[in-house]
Length: 155
Image (cartoon, rainbow, N blue to C red; front, side, top):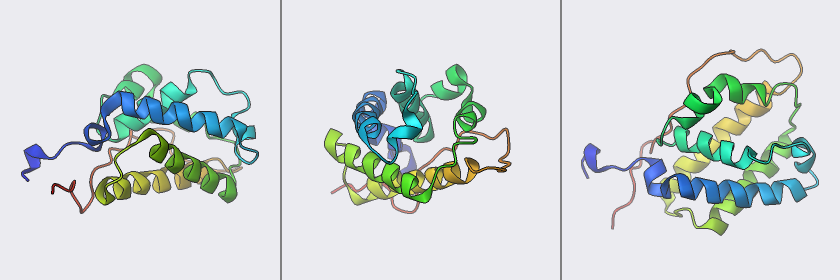
């Protein structure tokens, strides 16, 4: 497969609609969860859509989160001072992975490894940045996550 023929993770996942389905299903579980639900008690009704925009951009889709929501700086402000615990981070990850299965995101090892890699990296940063006294950089680009060392599997 040539580099030009390798789809982005966004394309492989199914585009904007796939990430919107993912976040809708995911946040329905989150708000009912005893451990992470309290972090989202006052969640904007459009929060799932905004997270879908973020994930779409991270995985190679349109830069809507940057152009419409303010990019990294805006996302960072939502985590500051939340004091996210490691058990809460892990539950968030597990609920997201369950939602990925439920909505039928690709389950090939290459996609799921790349997807899980970003989710682990991003949630660990969010937990770190949410702690009292944390001083994350106020400006940074939205990360752009790719396939890593394994391109998509083509039988």
